[in-house]
Length: 338
Ligand SMILES: Nc1ncnc2c1ncn2[C@@H]1O[C@H](COP(=O)(O)OP(=O)(O)OP(=O)(O)O)[C@@H](O)[C@H]1O
Ligand SMILES: [Mg+2]
Image (cartoon, rainbow, N blue to C red; front, side, top):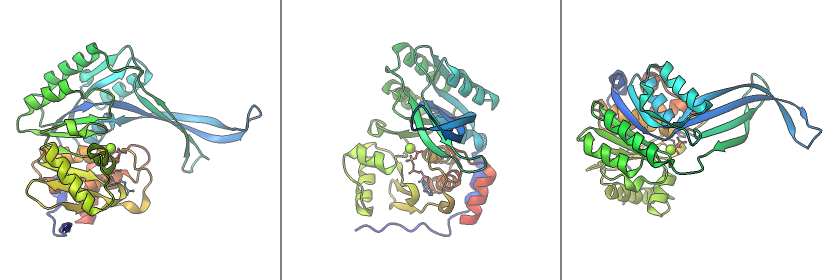
């Protein structure tokens, strides 16, 4: 038997929740990435090789990974304390300047002199005033795991910052900031405050968190089983929630929205919103965990936290690049939906 629970239409007005997100203190521990966009326009064909020559127009850096989660929290008025690692390079400077300019305490960000900032550079080509297409992505990944020293520094920053927060958000893209020592330190200190996690490769290591937000692919990989239909989703979601002993799990499902698994409740399926003009889905998962964490910290139950996160994700997928959702946009989305 698999009766997906219909999301009730008479849901309490989620709009009232939006102003309550403001001012929540959240520590984000995770892999800070730099998403770089190099914007170009097509010029001509090369005589050196059968390739296009593109003329450079401009470039910009957008926070990615855990840094995108930080950006999403800031956009909703949260008081964010990021802990992570950047290199002693231009991308590291750009990330620190970006957050410093927004009034964030960046002293929790450790600078690694031995390795570059993890970056993903997209070369975009297209005529001015038109949507550009991505033609190449250049990833800069570290050659080695984080050093002992860097990990010790991260742990120290976590310990210094965990006490006064309303919530701790772990954003683990697999680059090593969120190790077992960090998890133990956070778990030991967080008590009954909100602790959420998004983890690309290690979700089953995060026992005892308040909420985990895997996508379907991560759910499949964690359990080593396929999720091809709602019955398999039901079974896999319940298993993973039990395995990590978490009161709640939000499984994000791309354009199919999300499924919420919570203690003592039937699965709740929430359809995706804002799907008609989808522009770029990258980073939507970062928005989901940011909004859900703030909503839980504001006292919402997991169903409302998930509904609000789903609405915010619906807003950001209509924007280019890893993007954020403002309180006004979220209020408007909630108004149309409720
Ligand atoms: N095509 C889409 N149309 C509408 N909403 C979408 C679409 N793709 C994603 N979303 C929204 O974004 C949420 C998260 O998307 P998804 O499941 O792709 O996360 P993800 O794989 O973790 O993404 P990423 O890791 O790139 O941030 C979904 O639950 C849904 O609310
Ligand atoms: Mg994700």
